[in-house]
Image (cartoon, rainbow, N blue to C red; front, side, top):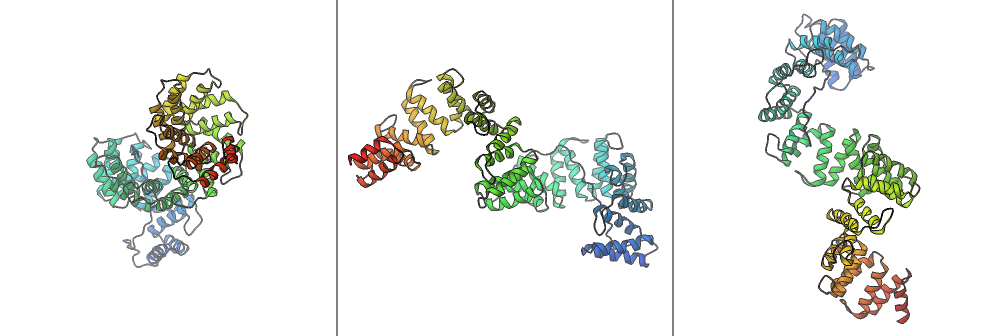
Length: 539
């Protein structure tokens, strides 16, 4: 995971929550109403808080004015109105309230309730910062960093962050750490970066916790430690940080730095997905589709693939196309499937390029077009897509659209086989077995058949069984022949069913058993396999 080069302050609208009041109104009703409003707000009685603060504000209580502005900005206890927020903040700011001054600066910077004016924002930040407000200092630093309302000045930004950080303000500590990390406005110093990230993280700042986790994940300024990374990702995730929720989900799913727990991974994916995190939505969909950490649910899988696809996640678009292709969680629609494959293919998604080529090759959702198929196979193969490389090998081998070329076929099969593609391993084995495109080598053929067979490739299982039965490229072994005949037979391959029946009939590699032989021959005969039909008649 990459660490951001620069951080930007999150501009909040804090309340004045202190119950103390140092004005001449100490014993007045206004102070009591203000204090009662603070207590009501903390209890979640926002309507009551607003009523009390209005009474206090009209009586001149500055902190009540500030809190009224915050209530309007957030829409707590009153209908949200940024213009009303600005009205009350301005009144309190002009009376010298540092929190209101900072909040008013935020309004001018962001254009909330007032026309955006960075210069005016800077004025109010400076007024608040002069009173020692750490948030204003931090916001002022961000203005210097971004050149908003003032000439860009990274050195001054660092000075602002440092003053606020010394006061224990976690956001400033995080910003300062980012400057040391990237060498912005200060000489790059990873030790200082980690120091301030840790102070901010321990102060409960979610962003700092996530960034510290990334440092541990990458070994930036600290010894690489997935355990420590998991610890800080978890801390930030519990605070609702979507990126950290996704990261800890990945850790739980793979057992990285934390006990493997795919059920817990699903829970974290869901939390991040509900916040609109596209990668989390995609991964959550995959869990529902495969049943990893949860029950298989194609409807939920489709839903989350759809949500991620809406955000332009090309992998999700490709998987959504697959849902339409197979009718998983949605009514089967080959035309819609092909459209989605095309969309993702144009985004450069290699899987989509391959599946789109398959659609053109088989006329699924589009008209058969071998030229388009060839085009998209090549697009995917250029991205080292193994199945596409195998498909190109087949076209060279069979002379489909292009001239037959066994050497090119062999090269394509080899590239795909090296990536573990079982179909390519099988095809490459056939090349070695027959000596097409390469010198004949039955030993290499047998090894490749075994590699594909171990991945469940039915024809490779049959062919290696034949090799063991006859001692071709391997030591002759009826027992191993029976093992592989059985695997292919159980997948329904009639020739393997017949040959397994022969083994039982003759007692080759198994105890002689004519009933078992008859059973397997019947299965092959039901598929109209002639040798089995004749064998049953002979019995």
